[in-house]
Image 1 (tube, rainbow, N blue to C red):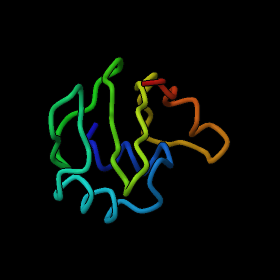
Image 2: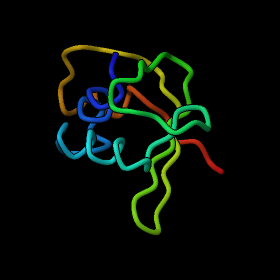
Image 3: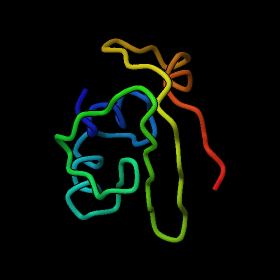
Image 4: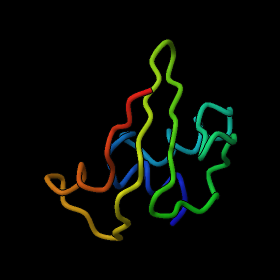
Length: 81
């Protein structure tokens, strides 16, 4: 699954266009490497989002194409730094 699509479906970022912009500007990493919007996300990957002075690190738990709002948080787990 594409990184920008995962960020939108998991509701870590509200819109796919915003997720794409963050990735293009280098504010998103997968497993410690700067990621582009089209990078593939796999189960077990660690995604780091740098948004201003806030950093969020999550581990991908599952990938789904159709996700309801209540199920979105089950796609990832927050990892402590």
